[in-house]
Length: 336
Image (cartoon, rainbow, N blue to C red; front, top):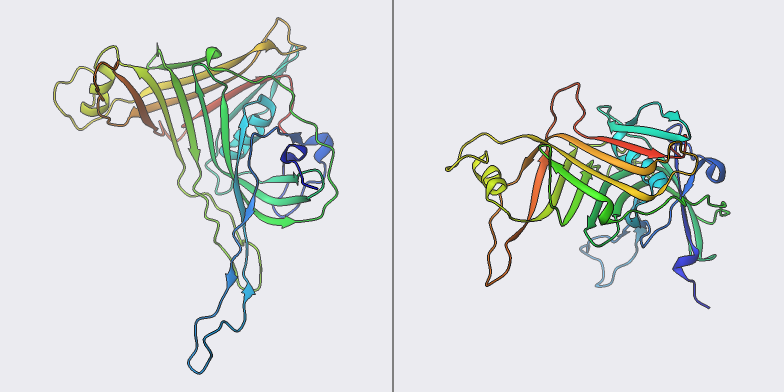
């Protein structure tokens, strides 16, 4: 008998405190539909070096310390994505609820530690069920094509794993999915005829802080945060290329300064939030106040129409201004 992957589940819950698994998964957690992915151990078999006087065969081995990590691929749904954004960025303002619609505003934290998640991962219909404590969102990637769904990949690192647990009953996020036809990209207040977009948040956690006397990670501390984005366009003028390579759209020769303009990525559902009055769509707005383009080359070939995948870097505007602001509109009053 085999085990179907589709019979498993993933439940996320923000932990109240480091080191303490949150058992309230069914009523306070959020079940997340996945396209693929699971966490795996980084544990290695420790084999001693050859010794003078020893034989040609390996005499013994031991198991070393372990962390757990992996990527989950998913279609974006707003309630589960809110939990991931909060874990990836770190600061969620008090939710604002009015006439059946809740607005969550999530921004990056300057604190030395980001929120921890408790995660339950059921593999198949009974093959294994794991509880993971002290999980962090190391990377978060969102993307969409004009004729596709908004999809994501989240990279998780977990400090502790417990196997053989009794599965909780997941409360799956049943909010709508999103598509490219309801997604817009605006740069410097100009709507771009983008064919695609992507956004990447990288917290650059280390997963090798092992301590003597323990099998587990001693700490998970985020290092330098990197936020990048890209969009694909059909070139209609050389303005963006000049800005990326020369520094400004009007320049005719290279300069040293870069143009820094606001980038907005917004997507919304076709469906309304059930209790919303007046009718309101589920939505996510991502705003980067200072975004600078990365130099790129114009690619030409035969009779192909000239198109470019333009990448750029988010920059911190000022100490009091977030580098990225995510505004979520949904029907859920809390973030799991």
